[in-house]
Image 1 (cartoon, helix red, strand yellow):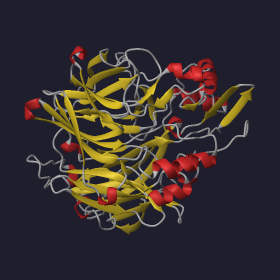
Image 2 (image 1 turned 180 degrees about the vertical axis):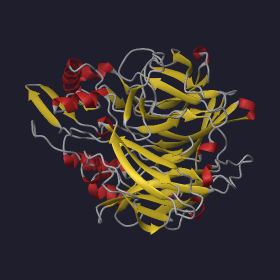
Image 3 (image 1 turned 90 degrees about the horizontal axis):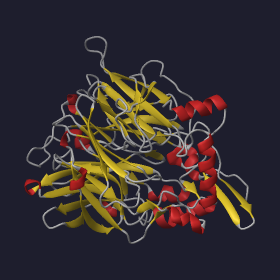
Length: 526
């Protein structure tokens, strides 16, 4: 009803935020098994939205005019949860693990904590009137675009931990997860920095891009950080990109950065109809912008594929002497970042009819081949059991920019998602590309997790040089899992070569870890 506030399913249950920042007192309680021999010392860290001040959706009407806005999960403040694995302090003593979590202390969060209330209004989920109100309110608080929440991913590069969100520049974190501050690389960074940079395991470079989704041209830039963490190159993409689109991820090979122009875009003229400028254009084809890693930007080539939506890529590499690029990515037929939020019932109906059916947002893994000579794009769905719906693909990092043997992903629990009205992932998937194999690891009844993170045995990152993947999966997959019945969050370790079996180790976290997004494993010597 007009003016009545409500809270959406994505802010309830284990999506609900936590405010406490805690450190485990001593080693984590082992619930099952043990940290396996050969598991490397280091830190598993995972980022995700966790609003410090959770506002509620509202709607105001003044005659024919309306102003509706709703808090969006993507706009929550960043919180990093970390499990640190340490070798025994004495010979023969087993490895132990500890836990801590911290908010990323962004300027926006600091201002809101000082004020004791939310200062920045929602921008993602708003009609035209709601967006105009939000822009005006946010401008008064110093940022039309709202907060740089640093809430999407965390990566390690050049000895530093970076918390990332595509709406701004990186935030540097210390080893104890305390925030140093924003990083602009000596003031050289132009625009924003993606939440999904690509690490080149051979050169040590970090390939990134940035977008201006609600601003002016140029709508995208590409760049490279050197192995030493310095900004080596940055180029604005002017040609062939006339509308800002929600480029959330990219692909990178030895020689190229590939931008993915998706059908979710921002068109201000939609506000003239009272609509949000951010919408999915049905039937609009995906486009792939292939640019030399270090430029020039004028050399960009745009190749047009089929309609669909890509939020995340798993890997990419070159073939035929660099005349072809193969991308493994999660592809959905359509998508939205603003499901119906005018009521709880409308949101749940979208989950039931669009999300869990695979019509929108949740994906299947595909292989996309860009023929740079012919200028063509071909896509092939990779085998999966029962046409499984998946997201959050990851690989052994050493296999990046090569034909990797294995891809891991989160596996949707459609039944529970439909019942609760919130997306939940009841297991993990492992796709073996050489054999076409597909394995499931299910977390168990009432247990849900998220993105898998591969950790190599003894921190020796190995990848199959010939493409057979024989050593590439020698290690473990780590993830956070929440047990609904026990009301407990856990860190779970799975043997990647015995993927379908139970975990080799489960450890209880000292507090609930809400569902989040992307993480990394940082070896102790990094």
